[in-house]
Image (cartoon, helix red, strand yellow):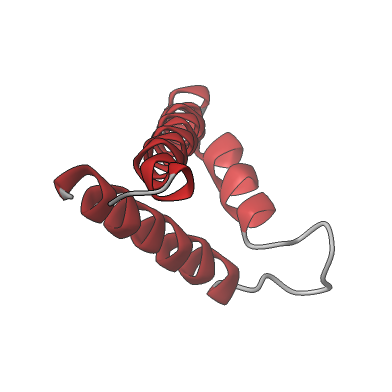
Length: 86
C-alpha cells in the first residue's frame, strides 16, 4: 500500500526533470549567442573566449574553467536523460 509521501516522488522527479530541461535550454541559448560572436569578427570571438576562461577574475586565462562547465553540462544532460527514461 502506497502512502501519500510515496505518491509524491514521481511529481518531484518530474519537477526536477523540467527544471533541468529549462537549464539546458538556457545553456543552449547562451551558447548560441556566444558562438555567434564570430559574426562580429575575430577580436569579438577572442574576447568572448577570454571571458569564459575567467580573464575578469584571474591574471591569466584559465581554460580548465571551460572544461569544468562542459562537465557540469554533461552531468546535467545525463541526469535529465535518466529522469526522462524512468
